[in-house]
Length: 205
Image 1: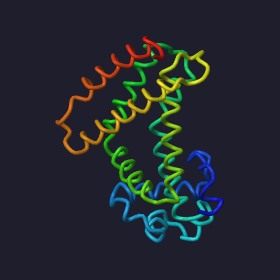
Image 2: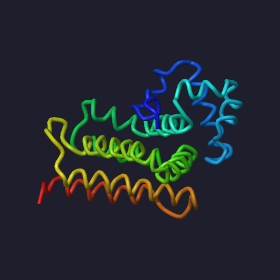
Image 3: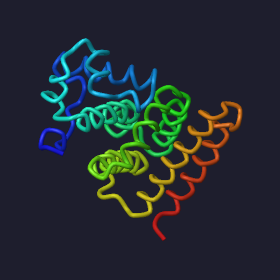
Image 4: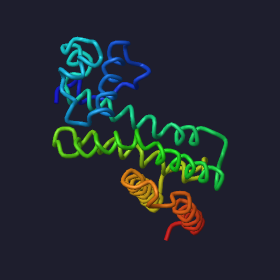
């Protein structure tokens, strides 16, 4: 990847109107026709822009796809960021985290787009490190919600709980996509919330 496509992706609200239209066009295409439809020509046509502008704003198709998954990740983690910066703490903050994950799982359209993008990005050796970085950011943010607001550093056990929390959310979301009646998400997350409270109360082993 060139320098433009490998650098940190700019948040969509900070992009130029043209770059924003290109990303929105790519998202509509992904939602309507899946990952295979995301050619440079198709994205430019959907956005009503020149194909050359994709390379100008994102460096390459890879840069555009990374910006797209970054946009989705930004939406998913909005509540976690609010919780980290807010006044809630302890079990109240943990409960809000669980509620936000349940709401995210039920946004089946966005979750389908996320799965479609990530399953393809991790197969590309050039894009895999950036995809891994976005997932690490999500794990770190979730771990910060699990910890008391005054905590310094993140214990390994908390990072493990964060990874397990997101793995559970992804797995339940996948089951909802396949069969909406296959799983009681509220019950599953309620059980997990109690497990988190117990594990965090016990402290490190």
